[in-house]
Length: 212
Image (cartoon, rainbow, N blue to C red; front, side, top):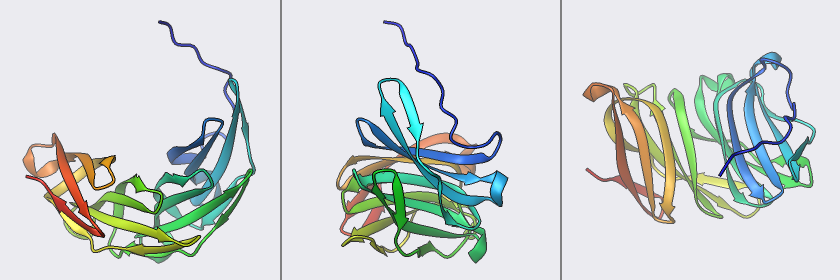
């Protein structure tokens, strides 16, 4: 079977968007976050509405003044969890809940979940109230690190204790959930010839343990 595509839809000025991440909200709506390099690297988000093969973008919403390594995961059709590295706080890892009402976006309070240099980050949904973040901890020799992020109420974020899953420098970190208590993380293991490596992460409450 062949693959066809609809018309493109521009939602940001040329060359401005870096570290882009998109999440599905419903069968007719998606949510995108990105670092807006054309506006001081501000963390920016936008709702994308789909009708057939036509995409209509909502008004961009900025949620941090200086960002990198932005990522987003859907919790519900009206709520997402975003994470990013903020240049306003010495490149710490930040998480917040963004609420969606139509194409209007609002945000909860920012929570620091990595006090070191947060990089190469990836989020995965475990449930409507929980996600896992995996990333390169640039302040700890680039070790591969994971953390559980919990969401309660409308926008309250709490985090579990960070757990190292690779005791060597990592790059290209990406995580996906397998179930509500299990995820798989893939990464480039710079401590082992930069081989691409996969590992199972088991979740119990707000704790993460890595398989061998």
